[in-house]
Length: 421
Image (cartoon, rainbow, N blue to C red; front, side, top):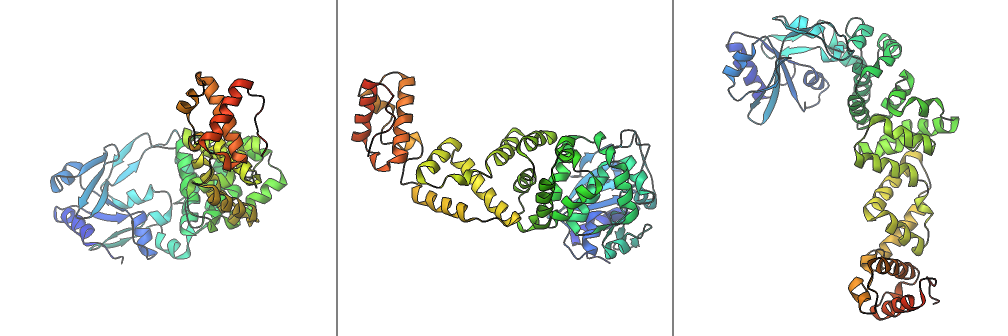
């Protein structure tokens, strides 16, 4: 028997005392059996919505169609769902109809995997018609009944099964694995948002390398990276991806970082197209594109002048993003990080001491007006020239020197873009 928090026991007892049933189900039961503290509590009950609302006046309806209500008891929140039977699935994602039932066994039968179909009540005990507890103990992901039918009902269950395997470090039972491979093309019916969500959840686990390997083994990687990226990948690219599956778990659990490492395995142009498959936000898309375009070459800047130019072009935030990402890439692929360390050391010497951006110059537009430079376009160009000079000769970042240079440029034009030291 699992250990129930007092708040959950109180919710269950309140429903039971009103003449109905309530069981803890799903992930909270699974995690408790594994000795983990559940993050969320899901309950299933035969109590109608109006009864639950009467018993818990502050309850909030989460999904009226599915009969889900949210109850807060002390510091714990629980979702209470009505026992239900799902009707026919026509879009490979959701049932056309839902019928509420008074039978918990029928409710458990509609679920995806046996490990999520164990119900426990602190008074009534355990209901486990699909031997889910045994599969939890064996660390197996097994579809309920005919797994192929489960995936035909909801193809997203294929990705959920992979995610559970990575999250829990479970293996996928052989018949369930075969069914996943056989039905993986049904993922074309699933929204990009849901596929992206499962991809990020999988690479956010402690065993994300197992998840990546299963993506390849089952054949679903094309639904994440796109058919063109997968079909045309070279042996070298697959070798990089294979290394990543073995080492990615050593990197920081930051999904955006791990996603960038996945895309970095593939040839640049195909990787850029691949990023568009999952329709990321503009910010995320920009980050991933920056990683693909710059991750393997930004550390080429190994002198102060070229480093300052690089940071000026990128901006400090993007530069720092690349530095942090490069650290994780070196860990994942066991790369020599000496160039990165040298660049970081240079940046620390430069930062706050030498001009990187136009705003760091000892002069600004108002100063240039004093030497007769009035047009904005002229000001901008001269400031760029002055910054280029100061990048090479930081000691020239003094107002008198820069104003003299600016005046010379105004008089003679802009052909002389450097001064001799």
